[in-house]
Image (tube, rainbow, N blue to C red; front, top):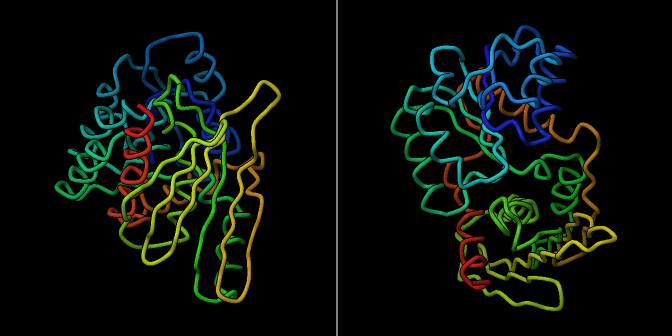
Length: 279
C-alpha cells in the first residue's frame, strides 16, 4: 500500500516514516510521498524514508497513493485536507483532533459515509497500553459512576487552542464511557479548565491544566465504580504513535473503521462548549 502524508510539521510524521519505511514494520506498505513542497524539513524526511516524491499541494497526492495520513498540527485544516481523498474512496487517518469544530467533524464523517471511504481519527493516548489497562480494570469495579481524566492543554495554543492537547484526556474519557453527551459545564480553577458533563448516566470530569515553565501535568485517568476505583497514569512510551497507526493500517486492509463514526464526533461535541465558555 502506498501512503501519502499531509502536514509534515508534526513530529508524529517522523515516527510514522521510521515505522513504515526505515523499520519496514508493515511489509511492503510504506510512505511514498508527502505534501508541502521541498522545504528543509521535507527534504530531510525524504532522505530518511527514501520517499519517491514531494508534492506542493495535498491534492497533488491524488493518483499517487492508496491511502492518506493527515497530520497537520492545526485541526482546523483537517476538513479541507481530508474531504478530497474521502471523495475518492481512499482510506484516511486524521491525526488528532479530527477537527476543531463539531461542524467540521460532521462534514468529514459525512464525506466518508457518502463515498464509502474508511475514516479514523484518535488521540494517541487513547491507544497506549496504560489506557487499555485502565479500561480493563474498570470492568471489575462495578457500574461506573464517575470518570476523571487529566492532561495538559493551552487555550491559547496557535494550533487550535484547547483542541490541540485537550483532545487527549477527552478522547480517553469518551472511550471509557459510551453514550450521548449532555450539557457541558465549564469552570476555571487557578490554571486549570474543568469541564463536566453526564454521558449515559456517568459523570465525566476532564481537567485541562495549563503547562508551566517547569513542565506539564502528566496524562491520568480514574474510574470510580460502585465497588472500587481504577486509576492510572497514562504514559506515552517511545512508540506511542504505533498503536493508532496499526489500527489505521488494519482499517485500510479491511475497510472496517476501528471507531464508530458517531464516536469520532463526540470529542468535538464535548470540546466546542469548552471553547465557547473560554471566549
